[in-house]
Length: 139
Ligand SMILES: [Cu+2]
Image (cartoon, rainbow, N blue to C red; front, side):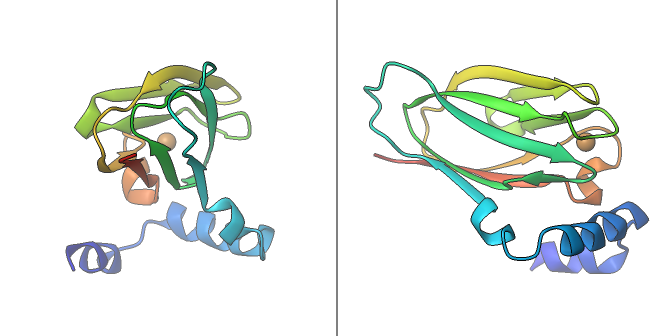
């Protein structure tokens, strides 16, 4: 596919570093942390917290499932990062951005089921690996 063709061409140095660090630091927990899901009924009163940790240059988790219509607080935890990062869902016009060491949060309801890519749109970060998938699940 287009994806693998693109990533095979030239891997940025930052990506290689981040990848090897991740491989060393997170042996078996990776699978469990790869996804987070908020699929409770939409009549819950409190927004459910969805925390995504941003580092150089990835998101953990990188796949997030949220029920359509469910109020959530999307938290971008950049507290362990060494630079500014963002979380941008182009298809939905959603954006969070936070300086190194900071945590940003925003309440949101995703209404339209579908699969949406999110990225960090700071220069070079997307290509270095900062992409993820938001899946809005039809209930
Ligand atoms: Cu970034």
